[in-house]
Length: 273
Image (cartoon, rainbow, N blue to C red; front, side):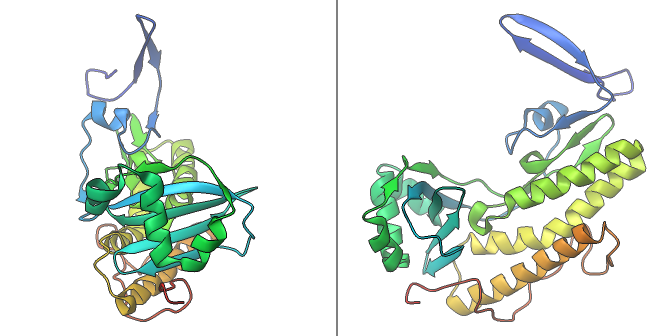
C-alpha cells in the first residue's frame, strides 16, 4: 500500500481467498534473501557478489565438544559448530560442483568432502547419529538499499553473504538493533544512518567472504583472508560494545576496509593438520 506521494503505508495480506489491508507507519522486511517486501517495493541490490558455495549439512549427536573447527582442502571446506545438544557439521564446495556431482546423493557428497578435508572427523562420525542431510546450492551475496519512505529491510532481506564464514546471524542481530534504534528516533536521517553504519560494518566482511566462497585460494591466501576476517569482526565488536562511538575512519559505506595480506594460523586448518 502506498499513498499519493509513493510512501509505503502498509501491506495487503491474502489468505483463504480473503485480502486484508493492514496500515503501518513503517513496513519492515525481515523476510530473507528472496524478500517479498523488497520485490514488491522494487528494491534492487547495489552490490552483488561474484561467488557462491554449495553446502551439505547435518546435525550429529554423540561427538565430543572440542569447540568450533574449520577445515580446508583445495576446493573444499568443513565446519564443526557445537549447538545445545548436537554438533552442526557442514561440508562446502563450489556451487558448480554441488550441482554437477553432489546434489543427487547428499550423504555420499558429504562423506566425500569430509573424508578428504577432515579425516579424523570422518572417523569420529562413523559411530555418530546424524540428522537427515540438507543441501543448499548457494546464492550470490547482495547488499540492497536498507530503507525508503515508509519501509526498511533487515537481515538477509537487505544484506546476504555466503554462509561459508558462518557470520550471518551475528550481522542480522546487529542490524536489527541498529534498525530498532533508527525507527524509535523516527526520522529519515536516523534511517540513513542505519544504512551507512550497516554498510560500513558489512562491506569488508562481504568482500572477504565472497573470495573465500570462490574456493580459488591457496593456503597462504586463505590464511590472509581469515586474518582480515578477524580484523573486520573486531571492528564490528568494537562498534557494538561502544554503542557506535568508535572511529569511522576504517572504511566507507561503499568501499569498506580492504583485506590485508597478513597470514593467520588461528582460524584455518588445512586437511593435513
